[in-house]
Image 1 (cartoon, rainbow, N blue to C red):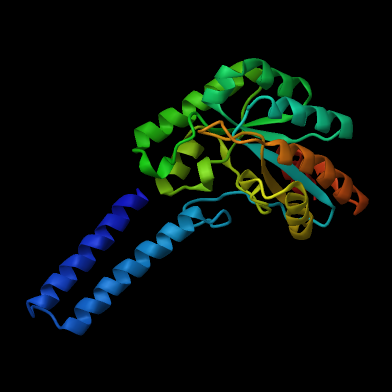
Image 2 (cartoon, one colour):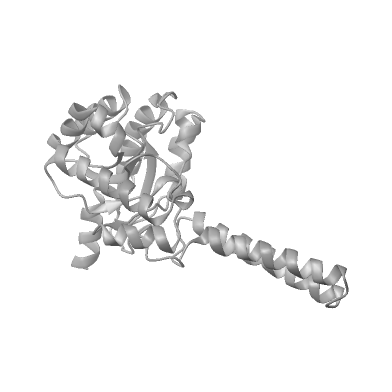
Length: 266
C-alpha cells in the first residue's frame, strides 16, 4: 500500500465534501468536518512516515534496550572522498568499529574505499542504490533501487548485507515490504546531531553526548548524497571527540550487528 495514494484519497475526499457542502447537498459543518479529518489523517500519516522511531509501516530498529553501555556509531551517504578515508584513520586509531550505510552508486565509483572499510572490520550496510526518496517511487522502482545497492555492496565487500536505512529514514508499507523482501532489516537511529548541516564540531559532539543512552544508534554522515559537495571534516573531527568523551563515561562502541547480538545474549 502506498502512502501517496492514501494522501491523494484524503485530498479528493476533502474536496468532494466541500463541494457537496457548497451546493448544500450535505450540511456545511459536516463538509468542513470531513475535509478537516482528511487533512489531519494525511498529515499524521505523512509525519509517521518520516519519524525515525515509528513502527506503523513496519518494524524498524532505532535502538536496542539494554543496561550495558554499548552504542553504535553509524555513517550515511558514503563513500565520499577524502572524508570516508579520514574517518577510517580516526576509527583505526581509536580502535572502534562502526557501521557504514552506503549508497550503491557512490560505492561503485569509490570501490577501493568500500574495500578499505571492509578490510578494517567495519560493517557495511545499505542506504540505497541511489539516494532518492523511496516514497516517490513505485514498488518496482523501490525494489530495483534496493537490489542494485545490495548487490553492489556485497560484490565489493565480499560479505552479506543485512541492514538498510532508507534515504532520510522515509518509508511506508510498500518501502518496508521491499526492504523485507530483499532480506534486510530496517535500521534508523535514536541520536541525530544533524551533522550534515555543519553546525560546528563542538555542537555535533554536544548533541550526541547529551542525548546518548545505552543501546543507542548514533547517526552521522561521512557522505553528502546526492550532491557530493559539502565538507564532512566536522564529522570526522567530532567522531574522535565523541569516542573520547563517551569512553570516559564508560561507553563501548560496537557495530549494529554487535548491538543486536548483545540484546539476544541478554
